[in-house]
Amino acid sequence: MSTAFDLLYSETEEELRSAVRALLADRCAPAGVLARAETGRPHDPELWHTLAAEIGTAGLLVPEKLGGLGAGHREAAVVLEELGRAVAPVPYLTSAVLATEILLGCDTETPEVAGLLRELAAGRQVCAPALPLTQAPGAPLPTAVRDTGGGILTGTVTSVADAVAADVLLVLADRGLYAVPAAEASLTGRVPLDLTRPLAAVTLDGAAGTLLADPATARAAVAGALLSGAGLLASEQLGLAEWCLTETVRHVRGRHQFNRPVGSFQALKHRLAQLWLDVASARAAARAAADALATGAPDAPLTVAVAQAYCSGVAVRAAEECVQLHGGIGMTWEHPAHLYLKRAKADALTLGTPGHHHTLVADFAELPSP
Image (cartoon, rainbow, N blue to C red; front, side, top):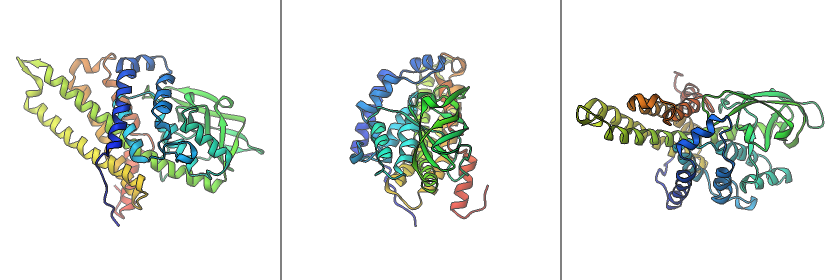
């Protein structure tokens, strides 16, 4: 049965957008993001504290009884739109979305689960799932970590996003889901394509973990979190594409050749008009995914797969057009266009490639796979 989606932003969502956008405009300028990215440690703890704790975005998905705001996926999607517009180097997707959703899929009456959720909602801790960033919903879950007895964990997980900023790692092992202090894991940094979202190989060699859920519950919780993460990632891709379109239009209006703005040339008008249509369609797809997740729609997996299959490509095209239509300046390291292109390319691999989601769409719609 099809579901009627509400794609309009509520007054509350617009107020949240304004607060997040104002913060990022003040504290997350492109030059600052680039400077931090060059250090190899892009995370800004002060920015994260303000965003997560003072504005309260880290607790949007957490119920009020557990110290959160009791909002939902639509509000989290608005935050991710703004983070995408700024390529903000904060662990929101990994901690406030993926890790939080995994914990919410466990028994929240368990003191360990409830306590960790309260810490995340308050912005006092950062939690990262020890899963490859490319782990896709609907794909087999990794089995690299073993419990050798008594919660002592051994194994290695590659390409874990934001592990370097985490206080706690959520580890899926053969005997269930475990919370492991990040200090007990060995992290080996990897060179990421996206300089604002660092990757690391996480090695557990006799690390002590706290059991949070049995294997069946753990796998169901991780599967649900991956679905939510993929759906909300579309909003980050939307925000990224919007920035690229807006910045490109601004540039071609001010750049002159032959005593005319280059934006007045018909060929460029057509390209930007097509990109505007693509971004408008991406907005509809991303909003539909966020609304489906928020309402628990039965066809949410299909809606999420459609959003990811489409928004990934739009974000990449928008970033490529941004670089190309800026001409020579777009190819420089000093201009932030390359940060957006790298984030778009990395997002196209995050939580499943577009090809994976195209296949899911075909399966859900009972159509031949592409």
